[in-house]
Image (cartoon, rainbow, N blue to C red; front, side, top):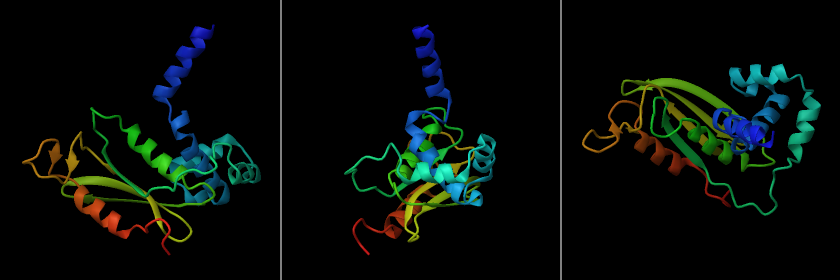
Length: 184
């Protein structure tokens, strides 16, 4: 029986977005949904609505999360690009990285703004997470149809795809725009 539970847990960790690495991210989204259901993407709104929890309970649980670590390091603003057709690196890794960046802002209610567009011949989805001061915590770019390659990169390089948004330009923009820790 114990062996069966181990196998089941392993399958869950490999196939579910609800595994431990994303728990803080999902919990934060859940708290956002409880405060304002329209503040999360429609797919999350529908998912949370099916759970049947009362908003007050969700808010109370999120106010002092069990996973918060006292003396945790200062969060680092994070930007991630990933092609949704990448067969080398699991697409879920990008969500996990962004989830950790968002979860590191314990005690903050983050606004989530999702946009989509087209650049360089590829469609993309971009989600920006910002705090109450409008400081960007994380950006998550999904380049649709892109594989394991640098989006908007020079074809002279390896693992580069000239199609899609220019990841280099966007990363530089992001780094110059984010507020440095401890500054006003």
